[in-house]
Each structure stands twice: as C-alpha cells, then as structure tokens.
Length: 323
Image (tube, rainbow, N blue to C red; front, side, top):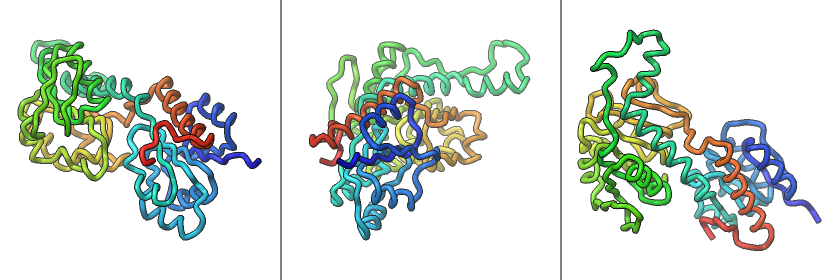
C-alpha cells in the first residue's frame, strides 16, 4: 500500500516532525517563508495532505488553477486557529477538507494580549529603548508616565475563546470592568456587559482589544471612525489578524494623538511593517509571537496531526471547518 504523502510547509518543532514521520511519508519544506503560487499548485498536485501554515494563501484562484490538472490533495490541515488565508468554500468545492487547531492557542494568545496591554499602557518599549540608547539620566517623578491599568475598563472585540481568556485575565488579575462587542451574548464566569455598537464600545473603554477572526467580514473593522470614538488616553491592542485594523488610519491616529497608544502583534501587510509605524514611540510592536512557546507550538502540531490521522483513517477531521 502506498504511504500517504504529506507536505509540511515550514519547519515545526522536532517532536511534531518525528510524530508526522511515524505516521506518514513526510516532506518538510526548508524555507521559512509562505508557499509561492507555484509551490501551492505543486503541493495540491503531488501530496495527499498539506500541513499548511500562516500565509500559505490557498485562494479560490489557486484551487481553480490547480484543477486544470489533477488535484491529489484531500485535506489542508492548517497549523493555527485562524484560516482566513485559505478559501475554505473553494477548497470544499474541489473536494478538499480544511481543518484548524482551536483551543491550543487560546491561553498563550491571551497572555500575549496582556503583555501588550501592560507594555503599551506603561510605555515599556519606549523606556527600554531609552535605557539601551544610554539616554536614561536617572529616576524622577514625572518621567515615563503611563496609564495605570488596574481598575480600568477593557473592551473586547470578539468574545470567543481568546476574547474570553483575555477578559478573564483583565477582570480577575487587574480588577478591570469588562465590556464587549460580539454578534451574540456570552455566558461567562465574570461580570461582562455586551455593547451593541462597536463605536459605542470604543467610546467607553480605556483599552480596546481586538480578538475577532480575520477575513472579509472583519477587514478594517477598526477604522478611523472607531479610533476617533476612543478616548484620547485609550490604547488599542491587536492580537487577532492584521487586516482587522486599518493600518493607515491607526498610524494617523497615533501620530496625531487621537489615541494614547497601540500594542500590535499582527500587521495588515506582514511581514512588512511601515516605517511610519515603526518610528512611533506610542506604538508597541511584536513580531507575531502570540503563540510562540514550545509547548503551544507542539500542541498545535499534535492537533494538526490528529486532524490528518483521523481523516486518513476514514473519519471526519476533528477540527474540520468546511465539512
């Protein structure tokens, strides 16, 4: 019997690779960049399954072009909870299951949100840059004054698993009032008030955290109007997808003091980050490291492999998003 051929599009933790090789005929791509258009077409034609990573842009056009030949691939197991880089309906129309890795990333991503909240509010990035540049002349009472986080009001945009984990940390850890914008009300184990309008939420909070999925429905959800509604001392935090925030509008808002600051782990055109954003002292910028712990990346890999193993064992992939 011919072994099932799997392409892993970028290097994963060693434990994940070993587990994959024990189950499948595995090819691990050497490059650390997303698949090119030609590579995606080749992968769809030559492999039974693809363990895809962020940025591997399997669009409707890619599937249509691949279908001009013979598509061998039956499943794309995405390494990550977000899958807006894959056109899941187009995949389904070509008989390809798409799965993701929910749950594994929740706590680590929420931790990163808290890191950005504290770094942005307390000006930690600017302070470190000043010290490393040899520009610190010692403590004095009005140096590097920031926003006190405890007891403030946080607004969560998208109250799913990650949004709730962030809200829980804010409430129980820092005594913050929680308000949120979501399509439906949520039952949670802490006080939280749903606000029906995103603009109204923005006007009520000291910290606005974006935790909504990416995709066309949420593209530029945070725009100049929402930023203008925020109090001038408020901070915007984005750990969701870069395109949810209109980056040009955010840069303008930060340059003009419309909001107090921003903490970002994702960017609209990543890995490109505009120089105008990079030079802003009121912007805290991380290189998309929301899930960057070994334990979490291993858990994500195991979940992606479980999807592949179950699928090729004749069952439904546990985390299929287009079955």
